[in-house]
View (tube, rainbow, N blue to C red):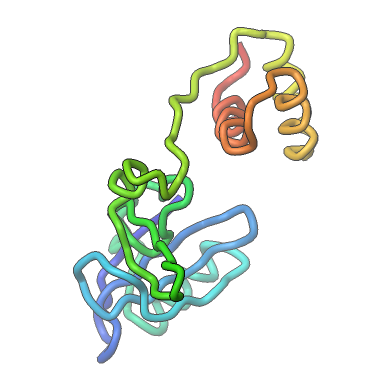
Length: 165
């Protein structure tokens, strides 16, 4: 999940983006209200902790937060628009729109993910996920289907986000 809010009381930062991951939450502090690369970020164990910092340091109240889409695979977490950072051979970093980077084959093309037709496989994966074993769920899916890692991760996430039938 990602949220954004505009800073109320800080001379340097104008906007923050809060990005929740499986390993905590990042609070990206941006110098500008327009979309662009972040200034600094801080890691927090929870969204609540990141929101507490945002309230104390930047005056951001609970009702100031607006949900924004999660980044696409390989895209920057601190940009609202799907954007990727590409490092040239000389080490220079440039930012490209996600679609442009895909067209230039700089990132893998995303394939549509659909719910697998194999009900037994889906139930086995849901069981592993319920028991806190996402890696084993991904290994099972890859072994049975031969899918690549990115498609496996996205499909297992889809299975985990849908209800049992």
